[in-house]
Image 1 (cartoon, rainbow over the protein chains, first blue to last red):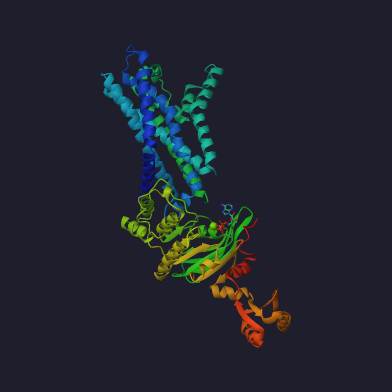
Image 2 (cartoon, chains in turn orange, red):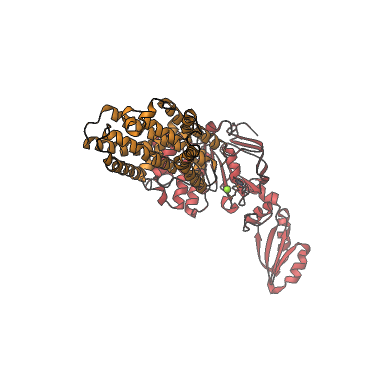
Length: 277
Length: 309
Ligand SMILES: Nc1ncnc2c1ncn2[C@@H]1O[C@H](COP(=O)(O)OP(=O)(O)OP(=O)(O)O)[C@@H](O)[C@H]1O
Ligand SMILES: [Mg+2]
């Protein structure tokens, strides 16, 4: 455990020192504030949802675009970059198990994402609650769930990033693959699904299959979790009708996200374990 | 070969694809012994060290480090081994102190040890600066410091002195001599036989993955069986007569000089013959085979040639 923590701490310190955390936190806070105050304006108060609940819905979309990208940028370089620069050779000559390296990096990078997301969104949430009183406990709960699940979504893409990083010979390849992964999960998957539904006039898949298809994409699982998870948000997100027959329960969505963290992470460890330097 | 040996290699073989880069290498390194691994670029020195660390899996033969198989007991073995990779790479953004602290944590060593080691390699003053700003010599010193963490029983130093100025090289070998006195086994690789004189106990010469020579410097000289050469300055340019005197021994002719050569064991006979020539010879110089010649006789080509194609 000492080793895992030493590696995690090194990653956190690197992130703090090269201002990665500062830049990412500022970016997330700025975008979150922008969405909270501009994006929510036209809806006014004719919807029975608090300002913060509205913000949660916009931030969920922001997370889906931004957090996977941030996580992949951190992770794609993690293994292949150290191998290429030669620092991995020395580290592996120490009494370190390879899983400890993967685990340490994961822990450190997840902490960086947690700081950026927690502070960035937290600031935005506090500002919204201050500007529009009447924020209930449930709204705060929704906000908390959004931040926690955003970190979880980041963890998913960290794991996928390590897998890429362990598989390829060169950093550039890992970078290319990371962009491809981002495009597929954040844009193309949904486009494909929509296109298929449109082509078959909605009869192509049953509600149940559709639920499963959403679980197969961590970004969709995340979206569904945040838009259907809490009553206040559901009202605003247009999922109110769907709630009764919500295809998947929040627990299943959480489980899907956790599986999306663990499976690629274990695969990354397995791939890295077999690799010769 | 004893179990007590720090390193035992027995018929060790490694293939990359269909290229065999280490061919059945057998050697042993005892505690407190310094062994130099000598060879051209691509001879397989680094690969050999990686196999001792369990970083690369052998395709044949056996490797035992401190009595254990490094592939199976990797963590135990590495706790007692220090490694300095060739052209060592560090995390550029960390200071020298943070770097050593990081490796010390991983090896479960206390902070005081880092302080002492930084002082020992002469980096105490630069410890607070980023490694990215370090010179080659400073990096190498930091590399040695991290290799010494935890008082290892075996040190693997891959080309530790390339790029060091003579003074630093001297102090490097000074530290290695101290370690020997403490019973640490040291394996170091190098391209230069000349540099190793008096500084290692045994020398192993590798050529394209084969171990082609093993022994002390004296052993290697003897095994090489290279001729001793003489350089005679002849009075009155009477070179032809003097040359005839040596007959088949004459090796090279420079105007005004005669250069016979003979096997090392006949050296005294030749010297007596030269003395018998009286005042026809004005000067004589005895030239033993150079270390570079010895090295070249094992690898089959001179040092100055590049890596194999
Ligand atoms: N990962 C690898 N894949 C394929 N070939 C490799 C690999 N690592 C080393 N080799 C080959 O193995 C041979 C021996 O390499 P090694 O690094 O052990 O040589 P070396 O004696 O350390 O050379 P140098 O003096 O240049 O450091 C070389 O021909 C090299 O190309
Ligand atoms: Mg080498």
